[in-house]
Length: 284
Image (cartoon, rainbow, N blue to C red; front, side, top):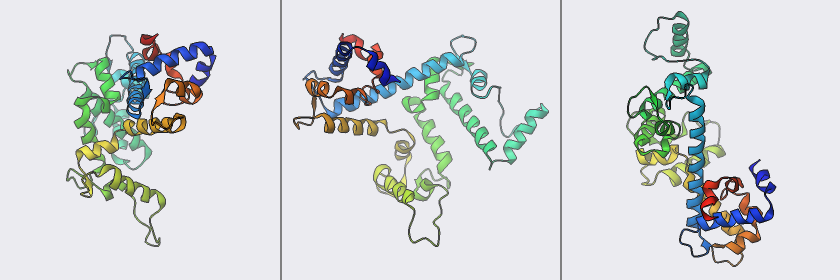
């Protein structure tokens, strides 16, 4: 849809906005876009739209428009009812107590998975609530929705991952724990392809010190989306496809020569940036 929208712009307006975006990507103003500049821009774009989405959700969740999102408001938006209990505390309401008991006794079924997710949400909600107020401010709500983007949530993200994957409680995640419940078929000659891929990721992408286990910082690189790697891959792809003279960077002329490729890439969020003056307005 975003691509269709940029097509609706006249050719002259397309080029005008694209040239403005190119100037903003070109941080050192040397007339060329390097891999580093493209990658940084794409990462910034990812973060910008994640924040914009969180801001839109905040408005939807803040039912009474008081500038905060309470736990009850979050529940109503997510589950169409207020669900608020501790798994170890009996409830007075017979229906909700029955609901809680099912949660405790049926942990192996999908019902448990949903309730477990709910309890994880509550822990993250409470951690994001820095001032312990009745609800989350916009900044705290962003921390709740995108804890990987906020420094004070880093420890929580790591601890949450350890609780899920560190089965022996040693503070690390071994290869076996990384692979989860997989058990090799004793009749098979070798592991399936997906296990070989996962083992390769563990050894070459995450276990930086090669000690056979993931420490908290290595674990963070696994559980947090690696936007940096995605952005670098896209930057390299664009340079590979559009660099006409082989200098490993892109000039404005090279981009305009093949602007459809650039406008349907993550560098412009598939043309979306041409309709967002956050990206092009300052340069016009």
